Amino acid sequence: MLSFPDIWRRAALRNAMGLTVIVTAMALPVMSAGAQPAPSAPSSPLPSEVEAALARARLPRDALSVVVVDAQGGRTPVRLAHRAQVPVNPASVMKLVTTYAALEQLGPAYVWNTPVYVQGSVQEGSLRGNVFIQGQGDPKLVMERLWLMMRRLQGQGIQVIVGDIVLDRTAFDVPDHDPARFDGEPLRPYNAAPDALLLNYKSSVMTFVPDVSAGLARIQYDPPLAGVQRQATVALAAAGTECGDWRGALRAELVDPVKVSFQGVYPAACGERVWPVAAPDPRGFAARAVEGMWRELGGKLTGSVREGKVPAGLKPAFVVTSPALAEVVRDVNKYSNNVMAQHVFLTLALQKNGVATFDGAREALRQWWQVRMGDAELPLADNGAGLSRDARITAQALARMLQVAWVSPVMPELVASLPISGVDGTLRRSQSRAGTAHLKTGSLRDVMAVAGYVHAASGRRYVLVAVVNHANAGGARPVLDALTDWTARDQ
Image 1 (cartoon, rainbow, N blue to C red):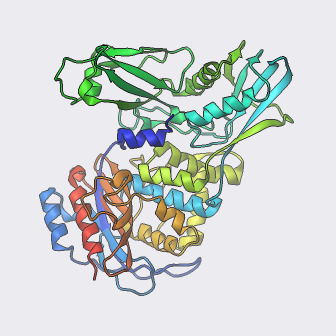
Image 2: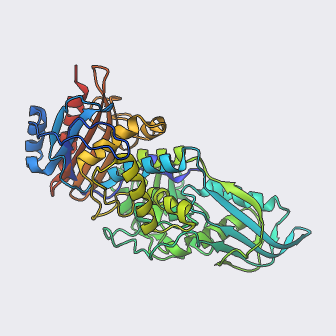
Image 3: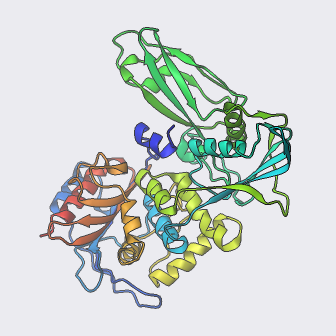
């Protein structure tokens, strides 16, 4: 069984794009609380290859903000600075702020616990009472871990629940979310909303496996969902049909919460393909997944799966523990997982206040930023994931944060979480020198950005922050590659 980050790798799922490029380079000394910031570096000429890339992409110089500075800080001169103090939309580069803050405040070994309670007596395999599952914000409660949870419940001697399964989601107090609001794509998994009991990212995964001899493709659905009719096969396209737009060829009907069907065909030339789809009824997804998995394992339920709250004084029968934050941060940054990033962000508030709210998370971030970054301009984090039209940060402030992070005890975990140029994650197809940079990417409509660390030929390590905000930002990738290569060529 595949977790959703694994599916993301296979399906090359990306965020909706809209890019603005901002590149700023300057020497930014590492600051402790109360320290005075170094004066801003004057703008410097852009390298000729970057100017050429901008021209080819039809991007004006003012679309770009960039900073290139020694990662160690100190008084080393800035290598490059351009529009460093202009607040820009960083897209998913904002995840750097969220994940670094979490690594420092929660610690790399932090885990999320999901307690499961059994109320009533168990006799001859039957529980006469209710089961309670209390969500605490685990961002990686994926299908295989739900399977393990149900197996552990059966390990309590329970095969039949003569009662209900009650889902407690009160740890998160977040506003109702319209998944179509951001870009009109409610079935894209990146638009899933945070939830104290987030199961499989509120998404299903359909795997298509062609059987040429039978003239059809078999469809596997994960996780199992109670009460949903799912078409088991789809006809193959005519022999010789190229793969092309295979999703469009399927003519999928996915908006009905209780039925999945296909009116088209599947090209055999595609081989095995995977299609992750967000639930059309996100609020009801957890109940369907819990009941579906329980019944898949042979369990019986006489009642229903419903929402509620764990009774006071009830002790958990067992606790399901998430992977450590260091692993979660890797999934967030390598594959730009938005809902996981929002969970990490909200956990900052959950740990401080006992309940997770976006206002509480923003306040926790503000307090941490002022202590660690001094008077560097505070980012406007919004939801902490960068999937936002309102998020803002300056290249100078982000570069300063990355310098502070470079000498932090959690630096190894943060750097290891970043995509490697030309090697993996969202930089797998980068045209810059393979292996020379660890950079978080960001892309939205009218925005494209990278930020992180570049390993130069001289042996020095540089912070690179580059953001493009412009209607033509979608063509800015060669500009960012040119900046990465220029930084790496330092002798």
